[in-house]
Structure formats: structure tokens, C-alpha cells
Amino acid sequence: MISIKKYAAIDIGSNAMRLLITNIVEQVGKETQFNKSALIRVPIRLGQDAFTVGEITEENIDRMVDAMKAFKLLMKVYKVEQYMACATSAMREAYNGKEVVEIIKKKADVKIEIIDGRKEAAIIASSDLHQFIKTEQTYLYVDVGGGSTEFSLFSNGKMVVSKSFKNGTVRLLNNMVNDIVWEEIEKWIKTNTEEYDNITLIGSGGNINKIFKLSGKLQEKPLSYMYLNTQYQYLNSLTYEQRIAELALNTDRADVIIPALSIYLKAMKWSGATKIYVPKIGLSDGIVKAMYYGKI
Image (cartoon, rainbow, N blue to C red; front, side, top):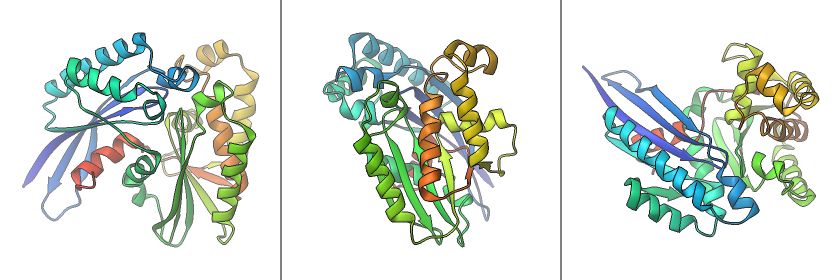
């Protein structure tokens, strides 16, 4: 006997907003399957507002309302029975964030929860991460967003420690990450990884997924530090327009991909990791699983 549930997750990030619709397949005696049915990404860069002027602008509030109305209709068409919408760094820091949540509830009938960095890291960790973590190895999981980066250390199959830092691609583009933040991250990584040997990175986020896709590697194969560094140098040698024309990058990906790579490279350097795995997971996958297993 098979039963199928339809859940949706809305991830309102600092660089883009995503709607993930998932088919949850339950079968007696078998592990529950989570199959992606649809993923829609809307490039509304809220972090540009929140981190530079401190509020979400009227124009972007209108765009958010339109996007949420569209997401609501898509969920209706797909017959989604349960959804959750989570907003991260940009909405956390915009002083009108709560007001925007109320406007969207009123105009689009979508309820949004603004989550803190700790909860964001916990939700991401409840995604398919366990499939990639071997109990005998130690991993540093790095999720790079537009406004923040979440670091989680796993050893013996369990999370040891996790922390969120205000360092993300949109902040870096706007020169809003000072040396002190980098030093804090370096100290945190080195302090928490020094007792472990042979650390491997696990990376998530749209930018590392794009780099992995460009590599043409099979999903279970890692990228090396050397490969990542070569790609970083290559992307830096191209103009913004060339990255769009020659690599077919989205306009809102072609600028943030370089600062994203700088975070992964530094995390690898400071932890001593020589390779990085890139499973297709993120906040929206975590939201679906956390809802299903009653963790949120």
C-alpha cells in the first residue's frame, strides 16, 4: 500500500525566494521517499535592501506579494496539503520585516515565519544530510546564503557544534563584512576542528550547486580544493557579462558566485579539508522533512 502526501516549503532568502513542492511517498516496510515535484526560484534580492538601507523597499514588498500570490496558486494547483514559509537573514535584519510578514499575510494569505540563524542551521541539518555522513568520518557542513553562512560540525554521525555568522554573498558584494567577522569564523573553525583528522566539507547553497553542475561530476563524487580554487580564479578573470554569456549563469547568480566560493575556500583552508561534497540539499528540503517529522 502506497500513500502520497504533497508538502511545500517556501524559502525567503537574501538573494532569492524559492518554492519547493515535494511528493512524500509512504510505503509499508520501506523508508519514506521525498521526491521533488517542482522548484520555482524568484530572484528578489532582499538582502540588497536589508543590509544597505535597513528595510525592505516598497517595490520589493510589492514583488514579494506578487510572488507569494503566485506561490499560493501553484500550491493550490499542485494540491499541496501542508506548507511552511521561512524567511532568513534579510527579513531578520530589516526593521520592517515583521510589517512585511503582516502585509503578505493580508494580501497573499501566506503565513511567513522569520527564523533565527540557529533554527536555520537546525532545519538544514534535518534534511538528507544523514545519507552523506559516514559515522567514521568528520564533516564540516557549510551552507552559504546571501546574508549569513551556517557552519555545522559532524563527527561519529552526530552534530557536535553549529554556528551562524553574518557573512553571506550579498553582504560581501556590498563590502559589509569586516576583518573581525572573518577572524571570528577562522577562530571558530580552527578551534572546533583541531582535534579531528581528515575533515571533509559538505557544501550547500545555490552557488556551490552551480559550480558542481558545471564540473559535470557524478553527485556522489567530491570536488577538490584545487578545482574550486581554479574555478574561483577563472570566474574572477571574467567580467560579469562574460559569466552570463559564456557560462549561462543567471543575472543574480553571476555576481554572488565569486564571494560564495571565497567562503567555501576559506572554510576548507581553515579546517584542512581537501575535498567538498555537494549534495542537492538546502533549507527548503529541510523544511519539508522537519514538517513531516514534526520537528517544527
